[in-house]
Image 1 (cartoon, helix red, strand yellow):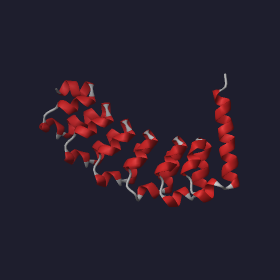
Image 2 (tube, rainbow, N blue to C red):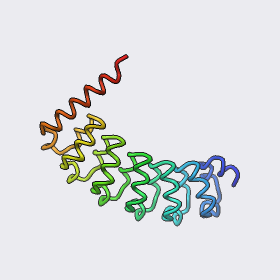
Image 3 (cartoon, rainbow, N blue to C red):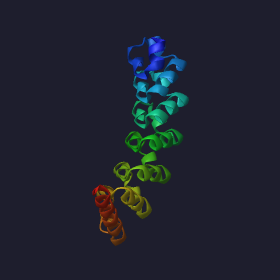
Length: 167
């Protein structure tokens, strides 16, 4: 079983409880497949090194981490840098962290969807999101949706997207 886990991290699903609680086995599994964290023991879902290894392989593995680690800024930044969609599993407090949000929207502007209301009202964050993906505008505050500079930025991004798809 150990060989299977080392080859395919998802095989942890079929492992014994003992193996699911073995730190070295779980580390090997999540390094191959971050989502194998789902099958780790509860204690290891709260182990920072294990969770960091998992989110560095697959950012959305954050969904299986302990509540405490979903609120850990270093873990979240690692997850968001791997996959912006990890932001949806972040603590409420970190969804309001400007640096985290800027890292996420630079990867994909639609990450603005998971931002706190305060950051949806932040011109710099909204502009960064809209510059990356014009569709992010729908998640901005009503005030910034109607802002001239944001509108121009959205239109420029939309035109660039259109031009990018032409043969």
